[in-house]
Image 1: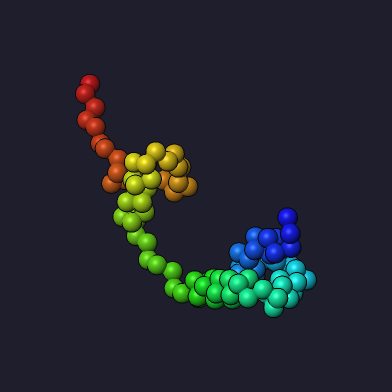
Image 2: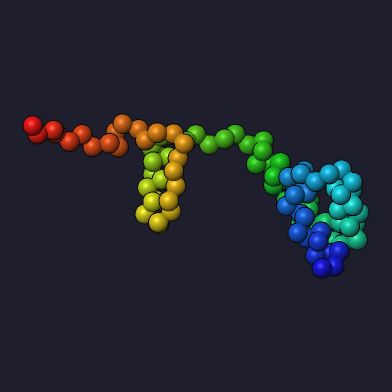
Length: 96
């Protein structure tokens, strides 16, 4: 694996500021030599920063249940940490 390929694989970690300082400096130096790498580094870091500073979307319980139902219908076996809300449980009469 050549040096350019390695840097391209590390761009996502660079964008999230997750690299150690010396490796980040090495990435920036490589960006000066490779315009395409520099463009990817710059645009992805800007995108990550915008996502981090944007307000979180409001997700209601109804939204969560809709997403879970879509996942279940596609065959995903997911176990959420929160218990299911009461309105999704069926109450069956008990015959004695």
